[in-house]
Image (cartoon, rainbow, N blue to C red; front, side, top):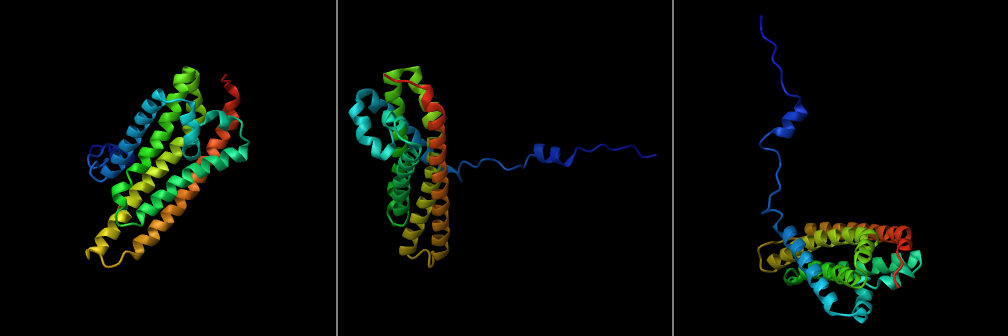
Length: 216
C-alpha cells in the first residue's frame, strides 16, 4: 500500500518559491534617483523655510500652493483649480523636456522643485506653529501632494526615457520612434487625469480637515 503524499497548496509554493519576482535596483535606478532628488528638494525647502519668512511663502504660492492661509480661505473649486494648476505647470515642463533631445539632463530638477515646494511649506508651518503645523500638513497637504509627487516622478522617468530616445534617434542609433511617441502621449494623458484626481483629493481633505485648525 502506497503512502499518502502531502503537497503544499499551489499558492504556498508561489509564495515561498526562490525564483519569485524581486525588486531589481538596476531596472529601477532612474525611479530611485528621481525619488532621491525629491527628498533632497524637501530637505532644501525645509532649510530655506527656516531661514526665510512669510513673504517667501507668498511669492512661491503660484507654483507650489504653499500659502496655507490663502488656501484655507479659498472655496472648494478655487482649491481644486489652484492645486491642479500647480501640478499642471510641472507636468507641462516635464512633457516639454521629454520631447527635447537634451531634456534628460534637466528632468531631475522636476522632482527637486516639487520636493522643494513641499519642504518649504512644511518647514514654515513647523517653525511658525510647531506640532499643529505638522499635523496640518499631514492631514491637509500630504495626501494630494503625495499622489502628485508620485505622478511627477513616474512621468519624469518616462520623459527621461523618451528624451534619450530622441537623442539616440538623432545620432542614428534608432530609425523610428513614432511608436514610442504615441505611447509617451498616452502616458502624459493618464498622468494628467491622475493629477486631476490628486487635486480632488487635495480639495476634499482641505474641506474635511482645514476647519480643525486655527492659526493666529
